[in-house]
Length: 208
Length: 208
Image (cartoon, rainbow over all chains, first blue to last red; front, side, top):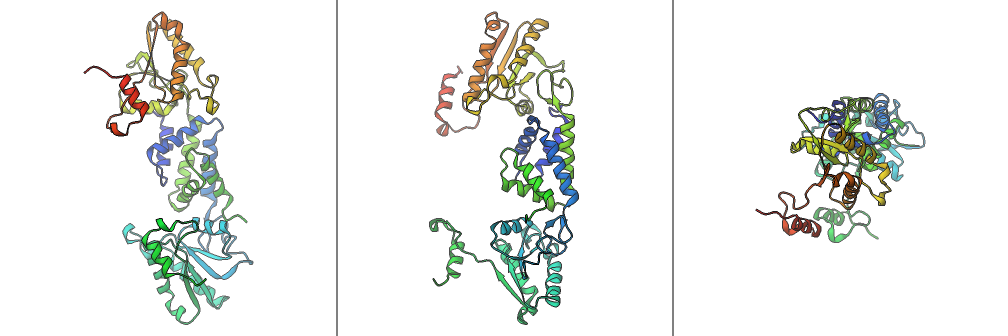
């Protein structure tokens, strides 16, 4: 005899599939809804189904949007000659929230990671190639690609892959590929910085 | 201009209301669904709405169930003269999963906690009183109440409150109130046990 009604077990089961949520947290979340008198579960349920039916990927940058071409890609006030290549839609949110970038984005969908079985063919390199080359042919003569993958081995490998992809255009001066700076984050304590961060900070040192 | 479609923001917003989920984790959970191609969001959404419409509290023990009287309360094979009083439905799950108890339960809905503004009137003491007294009058002559609130100050205060509630019946020998043992948990390292646990373990020592 199971203690829990089937409908409750279903919810725990679905919550457990979320990243970083174990069976215990999933049960705690589920019971939170059972305690709350305001039909919160129904509200989350409706929001989820609404999201599933309305959202899609932007045809140009593959960020999450509810339009064919997202607001960023279709904005005339943004710099269409600079494309920031990120791993995930959340990275776009991080850039936009900090309001430090006025170009466009391209969401790769991950990084090349042999350890996790992610090969180049599973990422949006074809779409990136088409978009960049059509941009050069149509409107912008020179384009800068800022590779903003995470500062990990996989992120570096992916950056190199992109550099190789466009080597012909880079030689012709039509594409310039750059990489986000690596070094000490603001507020960091040098004493606790890891070896690689210190190495990168030293290599990338600038005149004052 | 918001980066995220409204439907996505709604989901992040609803997830943030869950206990232990901050805005960052809420966003990560939401994006997990946007990445997953299997309509997982719809499945969780449907499960939540199904749960909200089907579950209710057992009229006798106030555990979560999909019946008027839950399977435990209506089972003839369980000991109806022992009632384990717990804070939350999850505590029932913990007992049932460990299969160490064959009596009935009563879910209080929390503990008395002046610090968090939870007074006795917000818990199910009235319902507990009615249930216990009707059990004595109807069928069982002597009933044991095992107070299984958490071993915290609030849990102890709640246990005392229950003891006081039934003082008349306790004197008459109709109700016996006990409390879960406190002491060292299995596998604990005595070296790291806190002062209060050691004190309780010493007070509750047993002959071997």
